[in-house]
Length: 450
Image 1 (cartoon, rainbow, N blue to C red):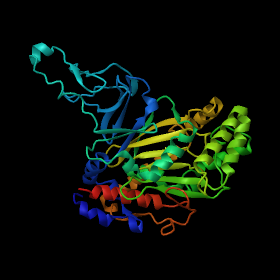
Image 2 (cartoon, rainbow, N blue to C red; image 1 turned 120 degrees about the vertical axis):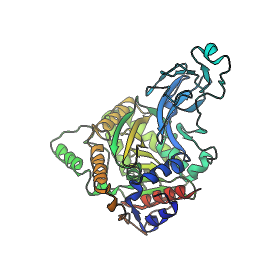
Image 3 (cartoon, one colour; image 1 turned 90 degrees about the vertical axis):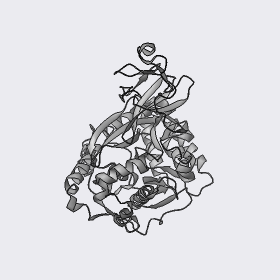
Image 4 (tube, helix red, strand yellow; image 1 turned 180 degrees about the vertical axis):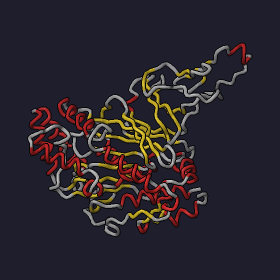
């Protein structure tokens, strides 16, 4: 499909109908590489990953490999990981600390700011005519730090990050994703990565709005295991995973107009049932943990002191286009940040890193980490359920004759606004598919922009 005008017919987000062609068509995949990933602000890491000059991590922006590095002057830069001589990667490792980068093919070397610093036999083979200024590594046009979360955009004409996010999204990110009121977040070492079937949009929309699969079918084996183990008195961290059915929960949304949508599932607001649950668990960990849970509750109440509704947390979420969020329900869970990198129409790579609240006592951090490894990892008991679904969706949908019949996104259609007011964005009933409809609305708008 090469005609963008046809997209409006098959991405009917207004009526909750989206044809699966957008998850399989090669032409659309190439088009969205240009119109979505080359224009959006993409999350490339966190400042805690590159604390000192010379610290770097490698990542991707769409399918483009990049290096996120703190240069000698302390500035964080994002460089395309591609030598300007023959296109070889100049950085081969996930993370480290270096004084510069050297290509393994012909030995061209580059500084932390991307500048070409030298080439073997330079005087003999280039006769002093090598234009080092022009031949540095490509630097990504825009880099911005939002309370520690690092964003980058290839687009020289990209809106300012504050405009891209919008006021409501910034409020939720600062206060309930990045831990602003309680001292920020601390990075756990390393990435967790796996390659999986499924178009990147399918997994992104799963995080941005699909609480339905949790309630309905996908994770029932885990829920059954919880009941069985609890009945036997087995209380490993994944079995005592924070959760509650007592308080009303909501579907959260932030973003409007040309700002990127942020969706949040299972938002807890307007009651203290989950706080009391966290406090009870903290009492098992000791007085320092109790003091911490009480302190962070005071901080959360402070930021909402002028609001009638007091939010506490949410379970999962997503920021357009490809950042997934998981484990934000409680300080007793590690906070997962997941990037869903496209690898062709029917594959993606999930790159996950985990953070904990920096000032939390060690007992809380240790428990949070155990729940990460036992849950939302490929060796855990939760993530494999989702991956199996994406694999089956690819098998069921790859045949071209099945592309036209639309997926159904009608859950809570017309009822998205039926939630309490008073917080940035919107709260509505859960489970819902309102956030998926908003996701495809924004995707369509980006695809249609010339």
